[in-house]
Structures are given as structure tokens and as C-alpha cells.
Length: 110
Image (tube, rainbow, N blue to C red; front, side):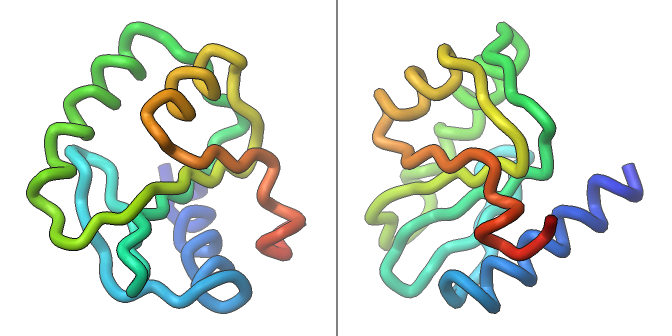
């Protein structure tokens, strides 16, 4: 857990330093995310691989219920340090999320 939290903090630091400034943190269910000034929500996840399981699908559906409670949402991006399954990508993109995989190089973490 300590590694996960440390890596998540490193991803946030790298994203806000090298990619785009964040305006604030927002919460979708149990997932803390960034929101940029342009309204885009960005989730940064230090996962090796995201498989679209029933547990993940249910957690995601629960998290999405919080979207109406966040002001000014204009879009969403989900950045993964590792990869995502084809089903995860298909499902997330069908909900208008931009999915970015293997972002370590972009963030300068490798």
C-alpha cells in the first residue's frame, strides 16, 4: 500500500509539473482525482494492468454516480502507468473517457 500511495503521489506531481496544472482534487466514489481549470477530470493510477472484472465494473459504476456533484466537468481522462484490457478500454471510451496507457515515459517516471 505504501508503494502504491507513493507512486500515486509521484504521478500527481509529474502530471501537474510536466503535463497540465490541476485546479483541485475531486472525489469520484473512492477514487481521488484531479480537476483542471478547463473542467477535465484526470484519474492517475499506478496499476500494472487493469482487467475489467465485475468488481471493477461495479466500483466504476458507483464512482460515476458522483459526476453530477462535481461542478464544471467538461470531460475526463484516465492515465494508467501500465496497460488496460481491451474490454476496459472499450467500456471506458464508450463513456467518453480518454484512456492513456503506459504513461510512465510521458510523466518521466521510468
